[in-house]
Amino acid sequence: MNHYTSPSESARNILTANDRGGYTIPTSGLYPYQWNWDSAIAALGFAEFDIDRAWVELETLFSGQWADGMVPHILFHNPDPGYFPGPDVWGGIGPIPSSGITQPPLAATMARRILDMDAEAGAKRMRALFPAMLAWHRWIMKWRLDDYGAVCTTHPWEAGRDNAPDWDSAMAGIDASDVGEYQRRDTSHVNSDDRPTKYDYDRYIKLVQIGREVRWDQQKLLTLNPFRVADPTMSFTTLRAARDLLAISAQLGLEADGLHADIARLDAGAQSLWNDTLDAFDARDAHSGEWAQSVSNASYLCWYAGIESPQMLERLKSILTTVPHPIPSYDPNLPKFDERRYWRGPTWAFMNMLAGFGLAGMGHGVEAEALRLKTARLIAGHGFAEYFDPITGGPAGGNSFTWTAAVWLHWAG
Ligand code: 2M8
Image 1 (tube, protein in one colour):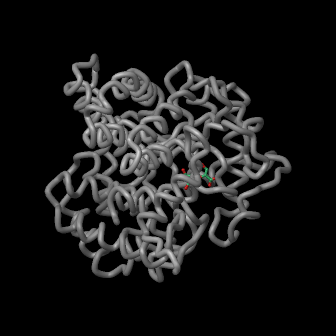
Image 2 (cartoon, rainbow, N blue to C red):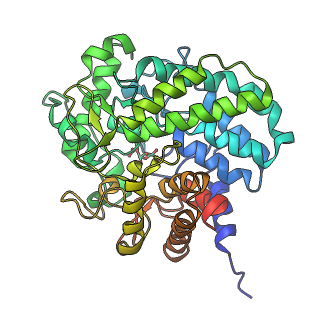
């Protein structure tokens, strides 16, 4: 007799198969290392069936923290020639070979959820991790804020939305003519039409070269790095993380000096990303002050950050009725929408989960539930893909993907 595998069983199998011992890779082949925000989501998935393993995921992530507090976007635990750019190209300066940039800080928020799931199992682990999480928060406050208090991304990979239209004009200002020869690996694993272009990659690598050249000295990079964009992803997630750190410190009686003031500053910064002309939260070039004119899935993370917006709610209601699948990474009514190309249109399950957390937390239960159901239908019908075509639901990128499996286990399924 055939054994029926339920989606939840498949999701657990994916997490277990992607477990490399203490950390989880996003998917085998395409992404063979530990990614920062993927890991925070993976922890949430593990917490549904192995709470100890959930804490281990976060502990391993913080074992790669640099002396200055930065938590890298990739930890290269074991060399793998299948990924480019690897540790030798990045020249990270932490305790574990790593990249030189960070990623949107989800760890504190997910740790708080995991703590809530089992406070007894989690209190000791949380106490031990807390100073490291606070140090990362302080590093972001020191090096990534613009004049308004919005949080900037210094590389498209730092925001995690690699080829989003948000960066188009900042990317156009990067001279990558001397980037040299290199061999991409991503397009040997998945369809190149679903990935960033060579134009994008030349600039990604050029920015890595600029950082590496000065050994990731943040003071120097403030003037050397041509790419600095105030970003809704970084701004909303940092604000939410700060609120969660404050709540955890109150719950466990931990020192958290300055967090109240930081939250006020980040709140003002996040609000400053409201673009009146676009009537949405947008990205703003920190060098030129220009708006990107981009409504992305990150624009819908305002509630996640504790920020209310009737206009964004109206937009969301319209998306929920006009787009077959959950919030796309770029507004289908805007000219740059590209339903297959990565962060320029496709829908990402975990971004919808974050929006759903925010909506539910701010009393928009109907919309949160609608988003959850759409995400559940998408995954149940099309599998645990990295991302999906928001019109047809077609799976794209890598498969057996960690964060999609984790989203199913914790929220959608
Ligand atoms: C994607 O980014 C990496 C570089 O960091 C890549 O394309 O090589 C993004 O979707 C990013 O948000 C994600 O963390 C990473 C691993 O899933 O893949």
